[in-house]
Length: 135
Image (cartoon, rainbow, N blue to C red; front, side, top):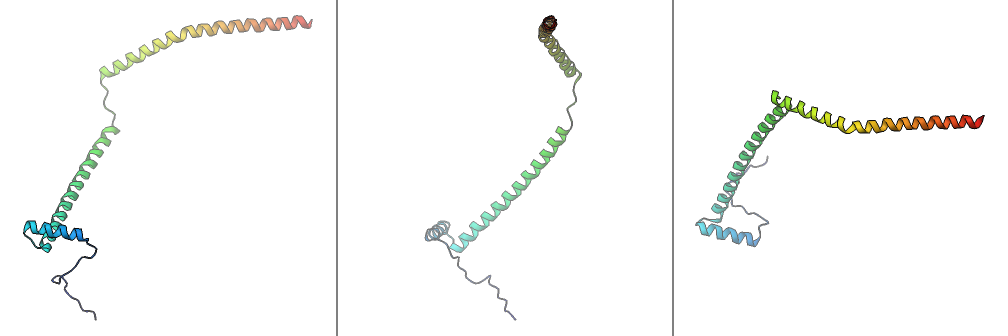
C-alpha cells in the first residue's frame, strides 16, 4: 500500500528559472521587505486576482455583447414602420424617375420606328428588284 505524504509544508524548488529571474525576484522581495517565498506568493496571488477580475470582466462584456447582438438582430428582423410622409416622398421620386425615363426613351423609340420603316422599304425594293431581274 502506497504512503500518502502531505507535501504542503516541505520546501520546494522550481527548475528552469534563469539566474536573471532569480536576481529580479531577490531584488523585488528585498524592496518590499519580504522573503522570496512571500514575495512570490504575493505576485502569484495578485496575478491570479487580476486574471479572475479580467475573466469576470470578459464574461460580463461577452454577455452584454450577446444581449446587444440579440437586440440588434430583433431590430433588423422587423422593418421600421414607414411613415406616410416617407411613402409619399418615395412615390414622388419614383414618379419623377418614370417621367425622366419616358423623356429619354421617346426619341429613341421614334428613331427605331423610322429605321424599321426604312428597312422595310429597302427590303421591299430588294424583293421588287429581284423579281424584276427574274422576269
